[in-house]
Image 1 (spheres, rainbow, N blue to C red):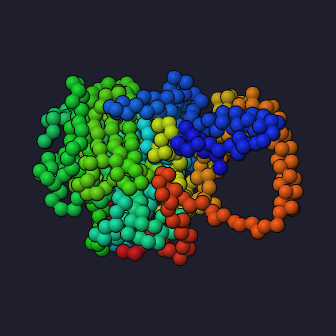
Image 2 (cartoon, rainbow, N blue to C red):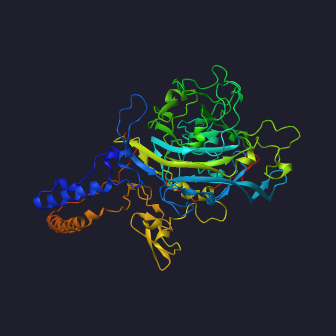
Image 3 (tube, rainbow, N blue to C red):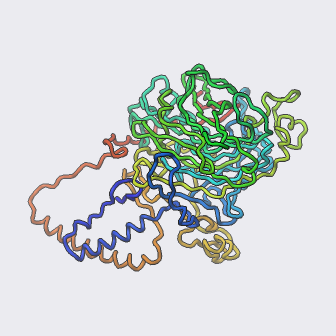
Length: 633
């Protein structure tokens, strides 16, 4: 079992250090050098990231730790695509969005790399999809007239803790409302826009046994039995951290805030939420009825304040005991026209809570200036914790009648349809909305850093402390569309149709052989357009061990590796022979040691995960008129 000591904080173990012979010591010392350098290769780092960006200093005051790059995407290769099976880092989904009164359909056609940046284009295009009439209890075909894209790293790349930085240019015109570009993070137990995976899971960040909330938190700390590799008496969920949600629109005074449009929101969304005496949308919270102690920027030129327009969501179910409340601790920052014409950086520094749900913080920054912060003490109001779940990254542009659209519905307009070019369906749009298409949301890079030798900072979507792998496998239908055989396709390595080498990774990622792309080492995707990506030391829950992913050795190591391997084989054969000879002279009974227990952040042993129960019912949901409907309701 190999650990990267720079990430896990655990010392690497090399048994050959105990060797008695000089020859053995030499061979294994050479192997140690080889393995140390090889495992130092970070599987998620884009080779196009310059060396000067391979480390970072935190902006949080008092944090003097060393941070190293663990993930990057520079989007330099022209024409890269993100369909399911195209890319190891991202998946562009192809489906209707049932959430948040969405008016768009997501298509992988609307995202690609162009001019050294990721480009999400939102267009006016009609798509048909299957909807459900809750009153008549029938399915019917409906249409949406806006097409956009969502890029998500679900179940591919996840982090627990660290620094996440995007450099992006916002879409559309700043004075026109209605677009909803977002950069955000979500716990891996929920897949964004797949509502069956998120209900009773989003956005829980709660590890206490609470009988009042037990029915509405699927993985509750009250439960003794947890199947699918989960731990008993450990609450789990899928919290959300919003790095940016931008709101365009005409400037003008807004109620109970000095912030004017355009602005962007930064938020932590968690459950459980406050059930009673909640603040009213558009008003400030009553004293003693909302969280306090959040930090806001006091720098000149940074206008940031509490977001009075969003305090959270009530997730309603027919059985009231299953209804629950989420909270959004959100701040707004006023921005200008340059954020829509030039690139700016958006950054979050996330320190997870510990095993007991204590400590941690989240700090938001833009262009290296502090905006907003939440410390663990703020969450004492409900007992929720700063997230310590593995979380993945998302980039998307949405369009919703709940975001920047006129409220209430304008006079003489029923707001029952939204379609540019249809006089009967344009009255509910913001002013000049239809002139804002097509538009581009551009991302120059995404970079993620984690603290060196900090065991709370982890890579992986399913970790030893917070497994997700078996739960997702046991509930696959929640994470995919009807008709799919699996939630994610394996990334195709070559095989795309080509006419020349230029078609295969722009001539660098592969070669065109008999009109089929064949990828060079370190490149993947059907057209060899993506750099390979993998967790260096993924945790396998099948056998309770860490497994080392395959990696590409630098060319200079190949010959040296062959010599070392031959030496290893010779020494191992000798050791086996000597061991058998030695054992044959012994007359004692051997003992078998028990398998090692799981350890959570190096503190105390935890019970082994329980086996999956194949009889457990899988319940799926669909979003109808803003509510989630399940097959048991």
